Length: 428
Ligand SMILES: Cc1cc2nc3c(=O)[nH]c(=O)nc-3n(C[C@H](O)[C@H](O)[C@H](O)COP(=O)(O)OP(=O)(O)OC[C@H]3O[C@@H](n4cnc5c(N)ncnc54)[C@H](O)[C@@H]3O)c2cc1C
Image (tube, rainbow, N blue to C red; front, side):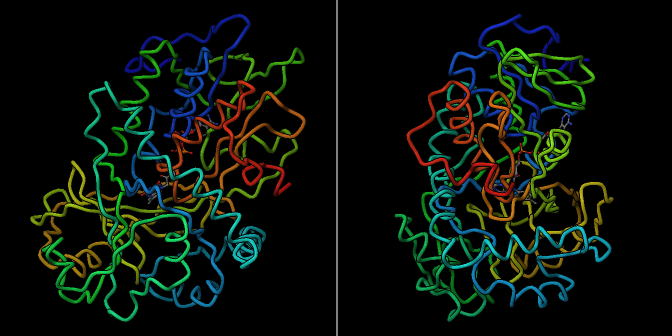
């Protein structure tokens, strides 16, 4: 079965040689496909849906080269009860899911120990730092150059005294070369006049990017994969296995497909493909929501982050998008769109003039590992099947460098950076 809108792919790839199948056509799979092509691989990309339709389309659109602060930080557990009890809070848990979540939660809190922080931060930074430059180079000549815009990432504080560059999370960015500026409420409103006067200060991260339509970036780059000879196949992947001759097989609706390398970029569903291989990875679905205000009546030039309720606001081609929430309920629970409706009140809190009449709600699944780092590289004992999943809150940002790393490993020429922090073995 092939997707007509993405060319007439066939399941028959090259009989042998340097070929790869990428499972999952989210932004990570698409960037892996492009990087594998750069390394001379013939590529087939398989997904049950059209390219970039899940998390890779609905995210907050922040391209964040300075992201090096993990989700689990020292002392975070003290905040969790307050967040859980707040109906507008950033974390939600379906209590019936708590028992299944507990091992992941324990690993998550353990990752936030102070002694773990520097290595995690360095590995996040290595993945995220080149993001803007790599997107610009991937989009060049595609007609989609304007989909990535220069931006500040403005962190809003209601109480001016809470905007402290001496706090750990800001020091971690400063130590890695980020240009930060603290501004007063008046200065903030000179930059973004639509923001409420209730915000007393802000911290700006400069040299950031924002996507004017994250799904369009994925679609443009997927077309680029095809333009370079890649084949997009539409189908559900049911199993992966070694072929006994040094390659690997993907069992799918599109047939049994053999290739010399297989890349698992199936986002939050990746663990389901690993379980039959005897590999149990702590990959959790961290569900998030967005609400788009199609006719907002106010304008923004930059990305905003509300530091109290922890959500992002981004001006996009389709309107102003509010996105956030970490909801733990598993991969199969139906969305609870009341979580997205909460963004109406939160939008008015930040942008008092916003028109909240025309909205559309969405839910997507972040693929989250406990230590905020993805799994990249060969599976233990299966060198021709490579992991490329687990990017959690930063998959849009980390996708282009992920492609480079995974394609380099597949070609036997990995980039010259320390890859040990991304090894899947760290949790096995
Ligand atoms: C609310 C929200 C806001 C976010 N904001 C940002 C942000 O501002 N910046 C940022 O960098 N990141 C952000 N993220 C995170 C980012 O969106 C994700 O990390 C990223 O999209 C993950 O990409 P992916 O390709 O790994 O997964 P996905 O986009 O989920 O793609 C995986 C693909 O695999 C396919 N698949 C899975 N299993 C199978 C199978 N068995 N057979 C066939 N196909 C299969 C799926 O159909 C899917 O298309 C946000 C996420 C959310 C939810």
